[in-house]
Image 1: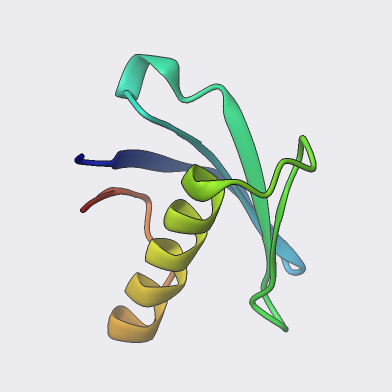
Image 2 (image 1 turned 180 degrees about the vertical axis):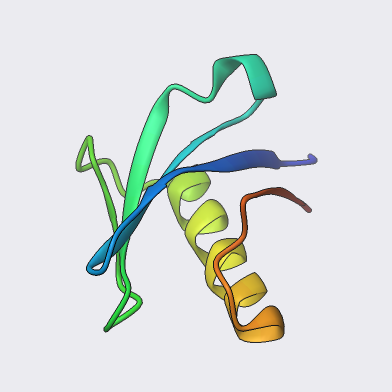
Length: 77
């Protein structure tokens, strides 16, 4: 079974970035925040499920590769 998650950065400040994410681009209704210092993600709806983990791991992986927070992206497995 394939799993897709899309994400898009909504905002960024000195403390955190906020991204929308979801299984389809028009349906990115969930939000997550990543603390810029600790790089710890937190879902805004408190639902730590597979999609949240997949999105947050990809966001951190892109940051590791590029040294900057991604504007948008996706992860497939």
